Every structure is written in C-alpha cells, then in structure tokens.
Image (cartoon, rainbow, N blue to C red; front, top):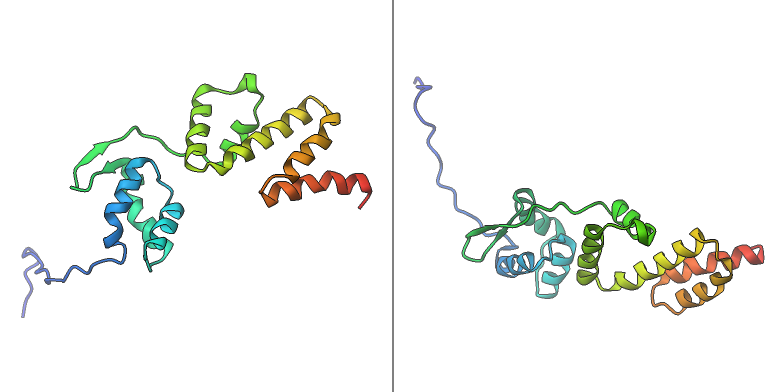
Length: 172
C-alpha cells in the first residue's frame, strides 16, 4: 500500500470535551471586562461558586486574553482594550516609595486602580509612604508614633515590621 504525500491527512472526529472551567466562563469574562484580570483572584472567586478545578486551569483560560490584550464579550465578539502591561511588583513598589514631588501622574493612576481592586493595599501604601518620608527626612522623633500606628493595623506584616526597631533599641 502506498501513501500519496500530496493527499490530505484524514482527521479523526474527536469529541470536544467540556472543560471544568466552562460553566464559569460567563462569570470570568464579565469580571475580566470589569477590570479584574488577576487569575488568582478570579480562581478564588469561582472556587466560592463551586469550581473544583485548579488555579492553572483559570490561568490557562485567561492566557489568550492577556496575550492578545482583548476584552471578550459573552457573545464572543471582541472589543480591543487599551494595550496595557501590568508593571512588576518591584516597579510598583518603586513608584509607591518615590518622593511626592517625583511621582508621575500616570503611575499614581495605576496605583489608584490597584487600590480599587485590592482596597487593603491602601493602608499598606499609606504606611509605607509615611515610613519612607520619615526615613528620607530623618525624622526619628516620628518613629514611635509610626510604630504605634502600624501596631494598631490589622496587618501582621506591619506589626512585625514595627517590632524590629523596638527589638534593636532594646538590644535583642
């Protein structure tokens, strides 16, 4: 039996399997278009709705949207969004800790968008900026009041951070 290399290869009819993420696609698309494009957050949200898959399934589903920088509607139509690549956390930290007079408006807008999605970061950013200003201006007399403020914070990381100067002062 000879095979003609010019003839098309017959395709097997394969049944399209539904993915675990399929029932949650309308929700994921709606949240994506609302601006929540963080796969981890979306994974947690659909887990609460009964999703039994893994976070990688959500990331794999979202990957083409990030790659193409498109917003997809429920009906499958595409609307191009402004091309925007999320800066690294290191870059965002740099923007947060800059002197107020050196901050750029576009960076502040991105920080505000992040705070609107993750409101807990608002207090963290405020405390970080206060600490940076205190150190930059060498206002060591403000350290005790800053430590008291972070100790009253609900964030353990700030409580731990605030304890370090006390330990150093006590010689621990």
